[in-house]
Image (cartoon, rainbow, N blue to C red; front, side, top):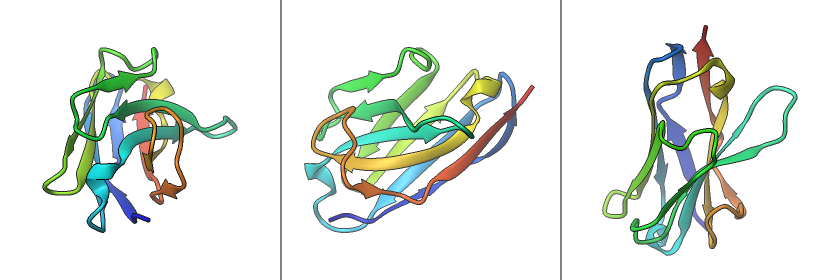
Length: 119
């Protein structure tokens, strides 16, 4: 088990940038692939980006590829999502997730952080 706490959400204008981060407790962070999911009002939760345990491989949803960058620091138990060229359709609650497989959600979720992009 790992506890996850997100931070860094907020309000930004379209075209702007925002960085959300997730800090994990426990000594097993490096054992997990880390994913970011998001959920917009009235929509299902969707995969945004994922990174393998060692950080060498990353994966992105087509809608964010080229605009978002996921990274992790296993020494600090953190995973971050740098979001550039934000669009109003990126508005959602962003969730950090620890899993065994990139893209497939595991049981460990953070509480979520709101990202709002105004047009």
